[in-house]
Image (cartoon, rainbow, N blue to C red; front, side, top):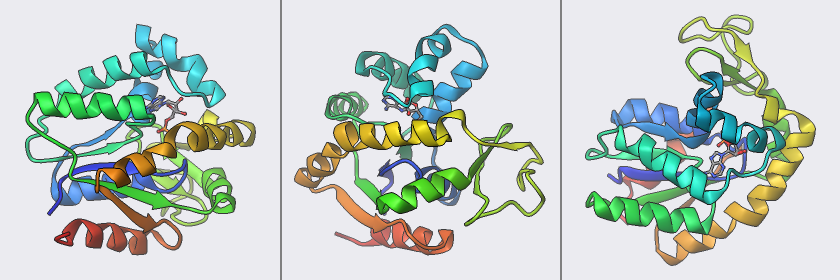
Length: 218
Ligand code: AMP
């Protein structure tokens, strides 16, 4: 089974949700650049202060900043049994950077799962997204609601909407995705690493599609 995995796709496609599930199942780290940055902002660290305005606007953090940051994050993990990356890379420059980082630790990407979603779905999904303030678990009030009103099933934490999930910011994030991140589809396709999975439908169906792709011996 492929275990060095990148999740690619538009905002709201379900990368975080699928990544967290897969991480538990395969017992390999799930590393989300967005979660790691938000953690820095919550802690009011120097890097958090540096990236806050970019995230608020729905813009990308500059490559040189995120690359240095993500290298420090990755260094904290044991990646030898595999990993799931969500939100990094987001530009071709970052993808090249990741290749070099992995080469240095004798690893490489096995599969890039591109979770695709039509644009009208993206906006709908994001408007329903709620995140646990405490543990980061992701819910959707329409598609994957918590069992108890606005409380996390996992830890009981409060569920909130991400500030950058508001409509005006989301539109900008989608534009940035199309300009900067979509070219990675061709990039990884050319490297024969890309596997497209339809992100529509219920969570469990998408999980099954993802697992099928990872299990296929292609
Ligand atoms: P996400 O949670 O992946 O949607 O990321 C939230 C925000 O964090 C993005 O809109 C960017 O501002 C920033 N961010 C996360 N990952 C990256 C990255 N790889 N490159 C640049 N900015 C990023």
